[in-house]
Image 1 (cartoon, rainbow over the protein chains, first blue to last red):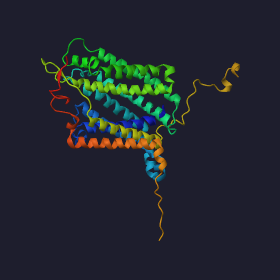
Image 2: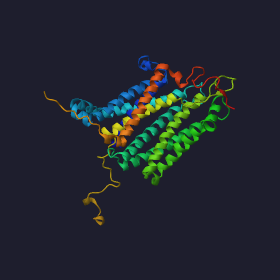
Image 3: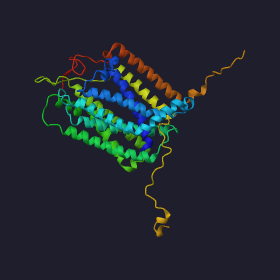
Image 4: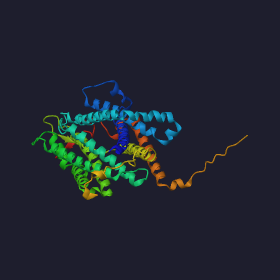
Length: 338
Length: 68
């Protein structure tokens, strides 16, 4: 799995820079983005997410430093800086452990940010929201990394892809998608039966209303069930086109899960006031939101293109796969096989 | 005095490469995205139809109605 770690680190770096740009757009006062780091609110999960994302991005920058250090241009023109950057590789195991802790903390706390809000009954699942967000981030991250690897391998010879390694990864991703599906299903089915103001209306919107296509189509059927089966069944997993399609569907499914979770709690507006009829509203992104998102995604694609072409972030060339069965030295082999 | 001739001819073949158009498309989208971001920064999130009339910010009392 080691060769894909370089790709995972780079994709993580690009992904988190995208996330930070989008957050900067969304916080209302972008000039105050630094307040979370200075004015601590230790009782807020959102504060924990802010600090962990900032620290994790720092860890990712340090993990990407050796990749920049090995770039031909840096090595030939500024060898001292190249040497400094590549030296960071010595602390890679420590960075990996810190990164794992920080990413676990903020992905699960992101779920808890929703899950602890009593005033939004559909979100109020303090025990399961954190787990769902954490597992979905693992599934989505692995699927996106392998998807980018496979697509780049098809487009340019600069991306050297080890098919056997990808085959193993996609099998793991298939099972992980099924685990996510099971958790999502158990979480929804485990909700108490009977009317509860705002929660029942939100469930209606999710399963039989405006979000039902997102939920049943994009999230459950095409986002989890079909791609998981495609990746678990050996014959379809070995077909590269189906592999790419299944991974793209899983990424879409994870995005749809976050989209549905976020929207369903906000579309029911006044349900929390006792005695009031719950009201609902609609949402579709405005043009300016779409243009901003397109710009940020274009930055991500540009960064990945540059990474693949110049930084060799997809290079499984030196990998020697372990043989399927251990071979015995000739002297130890049974006489019948000699 | 010695003069150095700089050869600044444009490589016409570059526009025939798909990668050129890929970079051009991404560059255009980034410029458009930055322009949209500047509008949000200058005018505020009101330009995205966000309001402070209802909790959550989506819609307004006029667009909110009973589900059934």
